[in-house]
Figure 1 (cartoon, rainbow, N blue to C red):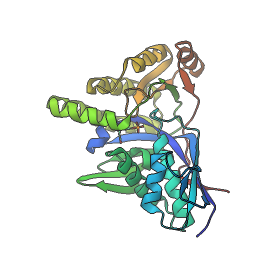
Figure 2 (tube, rainbow, N blue to C red):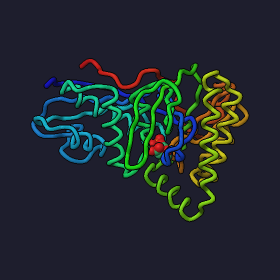
Figure 3 (cartoon, protein in one colour):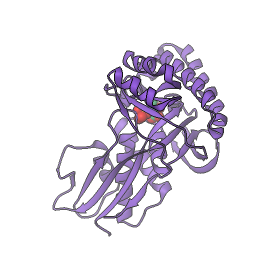
Length: 310
Ligand code: PMV
């Protein structure tokens, strides 16, 4: 056993396809340059961030699932705003799992992706592997029932199957604006499930999101910002129809509109963040700030999970 060990993993934003991906449809996500770090050290009792109870449910779930050694303390530090649709819980799950596997010399990127998905699924009750696989892989990732680029791995849960592929894309400029409202992934996923049950015609919205995601892969590879912005606007319209937008998200989008190619909520919605492709970054950021919102300055990250020096 090797202790102490440390690992880190990036947050992510979903560019296209959230919610539909829960139903086995494709989504595209990119890792961002904000990270969570996990440090695993010997301890007198099993602890998370120095405490015997409380703290992140994801870290406890990772320990319960994978740890069977002597007492340790798994400490987390993260620069990713939580409950904001930026993949904070996935980055915490991925870095926790990675530190545990590193300590046992069982680390492989694919194993981390699988275990971290199980950890997140266990805590949230339902989830797709979008966040955990993007955080593990880094770069731009397509989650789809079929292979869409360089094959990374396949994840199954019950009858569902997701194939995770990497796509090579140029750097896409992004502005992320925080709404200041929590986004509760479990609650929003359950809301969509209820809406689809009550109103089966909403399945056509899920179908349209699927078409749109497939259409976005070409412009993404080419870095065609004009087309991507148009597709973002369309994706936001469909998410609104699904009932996962929120007036505060619409206010952000309206404030950004004159300065961006397109903007949409990212992640589960109901709060969380808006992503936009800026025509003029400074003007877009100023508009969001003037409207009273926090802006996260970040970029895409090619680096997924990695070991850190202790
Ligand atoms: O809120 P986030 O960033 O965890 O994204 C959730 C994305 C959903 O498609 C709504 C759920 C999922 O697990 O894919």
